[in-house]
Image (tube, rainbow, N blue to C red; front, side, top):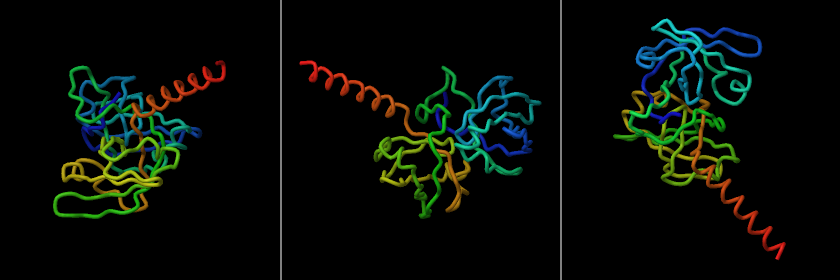
Length: 207
């Protein structure tokens, strides 16, 4: 589990083609402190497992499923990536509950800079629209953010200077693809309500 608070920007050092997967090598420093083989690190919001590390870089294998359903397949050597280690019991939950399981890929539609923040509009797969509400939470490329306005096909977020400077969102231009993860609590509520409604309808039929 993660919080959506990016710890540092890593850099893609190498991408090795494994035919049905890729081996991703990323240089980093902070997220490697106390990190060992088998630990989880979120890369642009996608939970990956550390398969090797030398203290200055680490590698992870990215399966075809992840390449098909996230933006990781578009990474190139030299690209910056948002990194976050899995949360521990001692860590402050500064963002929201993030699983590192990407629900879909959106596209940056427009950016509107202002003096103290920047409004960014991102397209949204139609199947995910029902999980977004104004002032609700969403994860974009691993960054926990508050939805400003939720629409049927897109949503807007407001980025403060800290987020613009410390994450990849400060340089995602219109047309860029970004990983999206909706609030897991919204999905649980939906499932519970669906079961309750189904049970109520069944009771009415049996009466």
